[in-house]
Length: 392
Image (tube, rainbow, N blue to C red; front, side):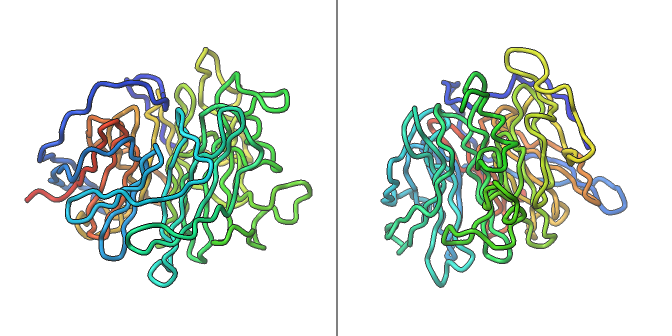
């Protein structure tokens, strides 16, 4: 495990006001990478603003023709084509927008070229009773049709925090969905802090779920035959996963997870495992003191990276393109508080923080495009899409 101490403010994922984001010009940056023999390799790249004017963008994906679809937390989907944004109508039943709640992730079905299915996660309900919902719809190039909610997270919760909501597809065309623990203290459910739901196998909260593309439950899920467990549960003991990536080359599942005050994590996630929250944690309470007296336990996998203070890691990817050959296999994670993209070198399942790519704005998502370049979404009222490309 790598433990990182940074001089940053405490983690905050609220929608509080912030200084207006500056425009990104073409900025040339020199970073380093590490070759197999340990030598540093200079990597020159530039950051280019692709588009601005996005309202709290949350996630992005690409159609086969390289047209982009971008979600905005307020409930809109923007299509970016030939440098211009166009809103695409989408009906989200009972959409709840408040704090961290709203429209979140978007993912194309692996067989999108055949079935035209697109999947979304969003918050539904109201301040007293809400949940993460998973919706699928067909995209005809202009609008989303036949929307259907295929899963609603249970139990309902109150407040406007910790929805999780990242989607990752597995090679068998089942999908993983990260679900948050429901919120911070003093929020309660059934007379106890809601965060203990992360340890309860009969609850969706604080879990990664695995479902089929129609919302049904795969027969080989790890807790299908466990008494009183919810069969959708794939892993548990998570606080609020904000980045989830299934590496089809290695078969590994990576997740970035928010701690409270410090204790943010990068985890290599496996089916059926308990990742500890809140009984094992490096986090401190917002009001002082440790969340738990235990930092580790023999039956709980150690995080590959722990950030203290919190950087609020967000969107996550493993770079597999050919535009930055020396970055292949590196994990990239956005930072909401650190306002950067962190590159993490991974070798033999061990992680090493190697560099920070400064963005200067809250980074909500980072993805590799179909062109092998790296794209970054900034979580601002006037959010931007930024492209990281080799220096010309």
